[in-house]
Every structure is written in structure tokens, then in C-alpha cells.
Image (cartoon, rainbow, N blue to C red; front, side):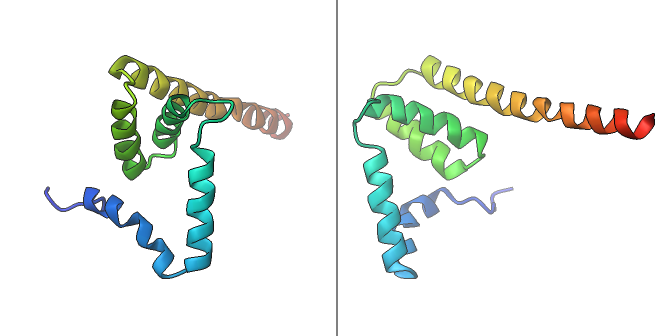
Length: 111
């Protein structure tokens, strides 16, 4: 299956979102750029966070971008995988903790 909804070449088109909404697109890119500047966290740490979040939100474009960014920042494959597992653990925990609502509702309705 060579055709896919996801086309890696589309990532290069991301800056074009300003074509249809210049003001909001520009504000987004200004914000985005500011977020990824060195601050209390290093750019390297922010890249790892972005990579983990990219997996949690399941964005193939972001995964591509932050894998490449991480490589350029010297992030190892072990660090990348550990970050992904950290994100997966939080996502799994967030899903499972909601089971308490189901349990509470079940107990209320079944008695």
C-alpha cells in the first residue's frame, strides 16, 4: 500500500498555514518558536518532551520532526525510546485511572 493519508512531504508545507490565516499562523509560529527556546529547560530536553508528546498524540509529522531534531541535538536512540515509554506510561495511566469512574458508576447502578 503505497498511498497513505500521511505524506511525509506535507511536513515541509506546515509554514503555509499562514497563507489562509496570516495573523493566527504568525502568532502560532511566534509562540511555537518562543516555547522551544532555551529557558528553565534546555532545547535538548524540550526536544525529548516533544518527541514523547508526539507519540502520545499520535502525530506522524511531529514524530518525524522531533526524531530528526533529537538526532541533531545528540539524543541517543535509548533516550528517545525511554521518552516514548514515559509518554506511553502516562497515557496508559490516564486511561486506566478513569476506570475508577466506571467502577463507581457500576457499583451505583448494580446495587
